[in-house]
Image (cartoon, rainbow, N blue to C red; front, side, top):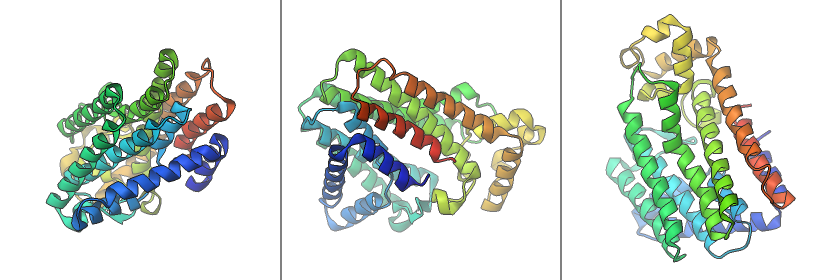
Length: 326
């Protein structure tokens, strides 16, 4: 199923109101991106134009339910925070492409990209501050702190042969699952959802985020550039140790002994190592890990009293994470 078809299925289940909310979110993001000087606005608008499925805003609305005024602000805030992390990640990775487009780093340089990321971060909190809900701001702050800790962990683990599955999953919790879970929590907070249901929805987001990151790492090994928007093996070139590599090292002595920093210095070498990883069956094991998290995410909603359309939409969002790989 294509990305457009996946989104269409979610919107059909969520109803016309979900589509209207997402359109309003897109308009608000464009307004924010273009509101602070020509150069900064150009870079921020370019980042917005690179697209994405807007999964995090979708989760805010699906977990919030009611048409509370603060949900739009929360949806914009989580996407702005996500955009900021992408821009900053591209600076750290010196990445030329993001979703098939030139990154802010490639187009404007390190200083422009750093400033753009900082601007998007600040605007995320400005959006949420307008809700006058300190618990909502605290939720976004928790996600922001987790993202920073995850990035530091990833840098500390670069090119390491000692990274375990457990440490890798902890990093995924911080770098990716935290924003998914807090998007769900923000929706529940601003939608005045009962605490028990709020916790279950937050857990759904956490498991979904873990699956998303694991499959993203699988795609880095298996996916062609025209599909992923970046060259195959980008993580290897950056020294980022992911689950496919961890599993493959346990199955292939040559990979286990390989000095990644010395052996992978150009794209052709990265692609060759990707082939070696795939040959071990590591991609299938990593995908199974992701599927387990998706199943647990959906099972965690079983006892919640949700309208049928919203439950189906949340299930479809979870399934869409897996469809990215299929």
